Length: 264
Image (tube, rainbow, N blue to C red):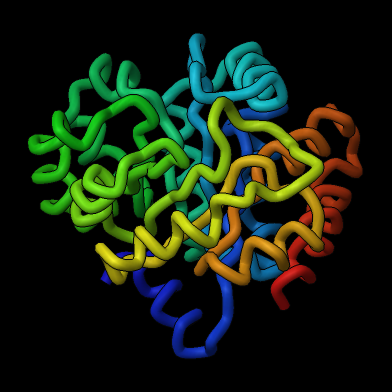
């Protein structure tokens, strides 16, 4: 069984909710990315999403756009992101998802990308701009190496389309709780309960809810309807504030541990 599926199975057995962290790979450098991954594993993060830096991150708000730019400025490439995942795998079994734009898969070659990612120890791919209707070859390749194709559902997704999307997803379904791009918000979207109910009518795959969640109270609120909570921009913002500080990893570790108190 894939590491993502194993983790959610364990959470269900314990009647616990999952916690998913997003950070930009290579922000501020890949050594820090490696050390943060181990720190997240140590405090009980269930899935780590690594955003692969891209020059035109259309789904991302300013915080994550700047993280991608810092990653690119640090010389981050797909090749050394995969090398970093392989290095993480020497010490950790934390499930890892690459948050990536399709152009990067296309440039490397779809089959080679999938095979290389699996060999490095990646457990799933969240390809932001690959519509499910165009993903048949991708899904076949993912199945061959037991990686999870993770799909997004948005507040504007029609019920019929929700059904089509979620039947193709594995690992977890990512419900984007707000229209627009990533970023911290003061309140939790009021669509979470309604949309997670629609998703559950169509699949038993766990539902992770993200976009805009930034404190323990919001984590707890979202977890009432979700199987897992995703926090990205709030953590990426902490990385940006600490920059090249020697305290970056310990600070982000403590900040994230506090967020997890919302569900544990």
